[in-house]
Length: 249
Length: 249
DNA sequence: TCAAAATCAATCAAAACCATTCATAACTGT
DNA sequence: ACAGTTATGAATGGTTTTGATTGATTTTGA
Image (cartoon, rainbow over all chains, first blue to last red; front, side, top):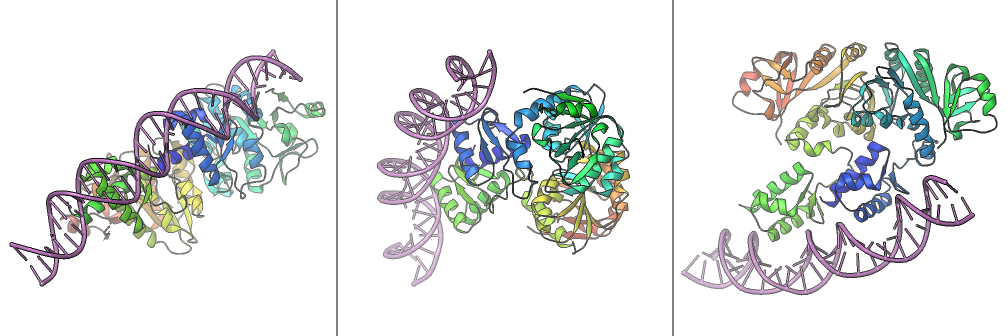
């Protein structure tokens, strides 16, 4: 396999996985570890991805939402633990909604081979859902290219056709006073509507989201249960408002 | 084999493979390694391809990489020519539908920076539409992972919200008797409905699709105009049924 | 915190690949 | 036919890429 072809394959794999280990890239390309490392060096130099210890991850571009950078690189293992617990709540035969966002994305590998139906507005989830053979419906509507989410009035309308056993939402801010918040008004509208259509409602939020407020509130705390790795002092105050599952990494 | 003929063959091979090893080009052309190297030097000087260690690859303008899909498609240059003409029909301000499929995919680069709205059921189109900054709506519905298309009853219903100035459809078979055909019944339903909602209707079909019949008919010949590179004897019979634009590569 | 495990950067020899040269073969125009 | 030009293929020695190894560094888990 020639160098550019191999590097393309690496890029594609990393995009699909959001973050790939060296070992996986070795398997995918058939090249040696040394070669992969050299490729990653070059690709990083070109600004096409970002190296992290153990592999490579997507490079967050300036146009992405401010928190996306930290999301991808910083709290990966925490998010995985959160996502794993969330996925364990999904029963055979369930119809669930998975919100766009990096924490919810991490759920997908843990849903492998479950006999469920997933509805999502996160376009970047689709490849992974495909890889894991999960029956998927995508929400229709305007594509917000920056975040890879589907939004807009059409999406809201489309959404109302569905009813969910469970929904798993992301949030950029969680506080006692303002509940769950997110920067984008259109995405907030989607989240709001989704909560209305779901029997069991979960918000996945790592510790960095607590005591932060983003622009748009999409729900009160009591409307959904929280899955988080946050275990600060104030967690007991939150428990008075809603159910909280604290996972440990 | 004459030099220009050989160089054309090299170009064609590289385009088809996306990247070719010297060894492969030696096999394909029957020339010696030295000759291939000299050809590659010249072709690179003309800017027609890019030399890489071990062979040659397409000249990618500053990482125009995103889809590996191009690599596997047959008749790539023919499809590009068809797509280029199709894209030239799109006017500023148009709302158009682009069908899932490899030929229609090729239209996207040619739509760059046009002020239009695109609706599509082809999930693999989305990345490219994003790259080229085109305002995009995605159809909602069941994701058919195999082909990366959105299908199903929900999609049909979702589709009816839209009206299109133009639609550009793919087809797996085109015959005088059975019109346009495609293997998948659900995709056929989408195509049918889309044609009903569009003012101007085009089917993009390379020469390999002619005189072939697939499982599901989705329209009569007269319902859409054809854009193709096919210029066989029977083309005149087709002209009696509908408008046909024959492009040359 | 420390020790074990995993990952990394640096190095080096082998393999693959490349540019150059040169002799031969095939064209070209006279 | 003949001299001059061009294209070709083989041989050469130099260069780049590659994969394994090593010891340093980072992460992980207790």
